[in-house]
Structure formats: C-alpha cells, structure tokens
Length: 84
Image 1 (cartoon, one colour):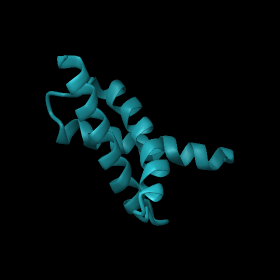
Image 2 (tube, rainbow, N blue to C red):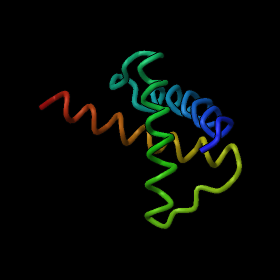
Image 3 (spheres, rainbow, N blue to C red):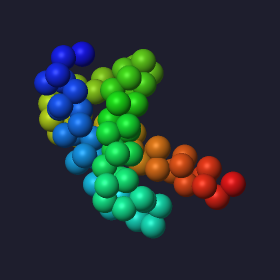
Image 4 (tube, one colour):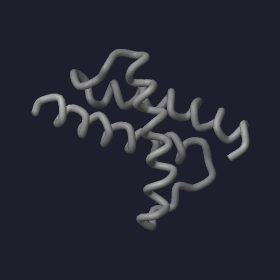
C-alpha cells in the first residue's frame, strides 16, 4: 500500500472514529481514542467487507460510511469485552 493510501485511510478513519463516538455515545474512549478506533475500523472495513462480498466503492462518502460501520462494530465488541 502506498503512502497516499495510508494517509487516506487515516483521514477516513479519523472521521469514522468521530462519527462512531457520536453513534455509540457512552461507549467511546474520548476523541483521540475514538479516532484510533476509527482508524482500526477503517482498516477492518477495508479488508473484511470486500472479503464478505460487500463492495466498499471508490468514493469518499462510501469509504467513510463503511469505516464508520467498522468502527461502530469495533466499539461494540470492545464494550462487550470491557464489561466481561
């Protein structure tokens, strides 16, 4: 993966992390923590969703949408682990 692709994933992940923090209110890790979760969620969405047959698409909005879904799922799973 080239540098611009990594930079785009970080940017999209930051937006997705912020959005997931708003969606999963009370389960987040603060602004910086949610941005990190969003970056990980963007990476997961970029690798897992195409493998499951979901087309991520090439547009910025669809990338943010799928990364936000990945970050929300990740926040949910982390919340389950933290409660256990």
